[in-house]
Length: 180
Image (cartoon, rainbow, N blue to C red; front, side, top):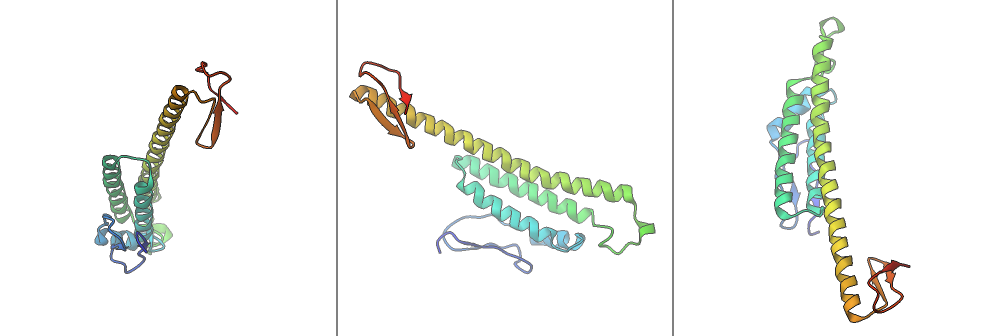
């Protein structure tokens, strides 16, 4: 069970149960509980905690340097913590027991917009990390291809296979490689 993560739900106290030696960061349990209390269904904090845990796991598997991963985890924690605080400050008026006459729709809509923007910033950050990871992976594949073609050229080979693609040239003295 090396590296498995047991997800926390209600009552998990914001802790990750780990097997293995991963060093995960955790969220503040008080902020999670406050967000749960302010949300209509009572699970916004738990939902954000699960999102945070899933994002951290994904960050660790992306093609990023160790420093980029540390910075990404730090940023994710800041974004999720900020979102928890916004949810706690903007309770759902329907879930809070207000009657229709007491609801300030303008304030409720502004609060909902703040929550949506904060949650969107989490996903936007993850998308930018995925894009960087994809660029890093493509750059590595390009370097591997260039290295393999250079080695095949110097060895006088007519065909070489790299990344499940076969490249060929028609003459030993040609420097033009084509894909079969």
